[in-house]
Image (cartoon, rainbow, N blue to C red; front, top):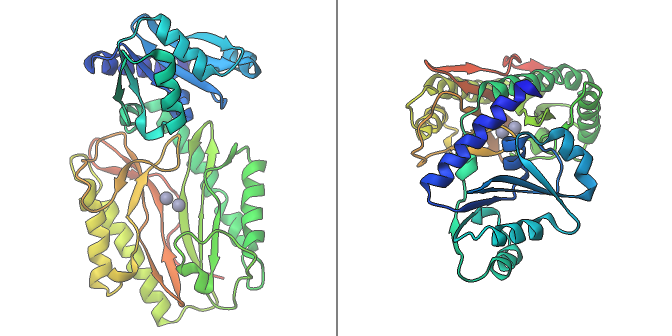
Amino acid sequence: MSKDLQYYERRQAAVIRKRIRSRLDALLLTQAADIRYLCGFTGSSAVLVFARQGPAFFTDGRYTQQAGEEVAAIQTIVSEGSPFLRALQWIKESKVRTLGLDFAHCTVSSLHQVKQQVGKKVELRDCSGMVEGLRLIKDAEEIARIRLAIKLGSALFPTALKHIRSGIRESQVAAEIEYEARRRGAEGMSFETIVAGGARSALPHGRASRERLPQRGFVVLDFGVILTGYCSDMSRTVHLGKPDARARTMYEAVLRAQLAAIKRVRPGVAVSAVDEAARSVLNKAGFGQFFTHSTGHGVGLEIHEAPRIAGKQRQKLQPGMVITVEPGIYIPGEGGVRIEDMVLVTERGCEVLTPTTKRLITI
Ligand code: ZN
Ligand code: ZN
């Protein structure tokens, strides 16, 4: 805890600076990932308020012990009823005039409650993305945790290979991956495991179904684990049976696109340039129209966070960002290929964090 404490204190200090710079008397946070990031709490019922008199953490009676063990450097208030209402009451008593809220994650009813509880005189301001903006750049502690999540995640690939064969259900392969993840200590999967065989490999989000893997064709695997709160995310595509020339061409095009995009990853480069690098390789190879999603996304406490690695996004890469690079091609009725690594933006360029081989594996 003592080692972690400095990270939480540093992150809290950054939020306090943002609150002051935005001239807010208080900032109310409800997103679980933001709260975990700022004070270490891993439960689900919590509200965090940064006010002039200091930060305060609100939870309910089910989490008294957990909050005592986990919440770092913040006074804790255990409410009898809803922690959200208790926090609003506290804000009201604190004579707040400007209150920042994460509008992007506010429901209509919660906004209604805020207005009702704190009164009409309080000015509400949209602070969407304020904490996510901090979470964009991972500190040393986060990078260490992400590395461990990736290590566990990539260790599941050999398990998947052991079970992939024609005739097995996609869901059975997913079950083996997920069982092994839990056995190795994962807190959970970071999203629903994708195992998509044959023509189903052309579905970019082909969740493992009851379908059986075919005699021949691609199998797209996309999975990740959560370990100490942080997500991993990787995709590999293998081939059942000997790949024909067309399949090889598809695979090589995606691999070249992925490598070209990784090559562009360095501080100061616009995320759109990374997307463009992948897209231009696939365009030249004649598969451009089949690359139907963006090239990647940030990963951290959440599986999809900023930045989005897509065209038209002007955001520039900075050291400490952790992103995925995952171009793919999906030909309806035929099949698809995706290759995805997690990449850390370093001072001078980048480091590919996913250690798994990208040569085409035939089963
Ligand atoms: Zn993925
Ligand atoms: Zn991804």
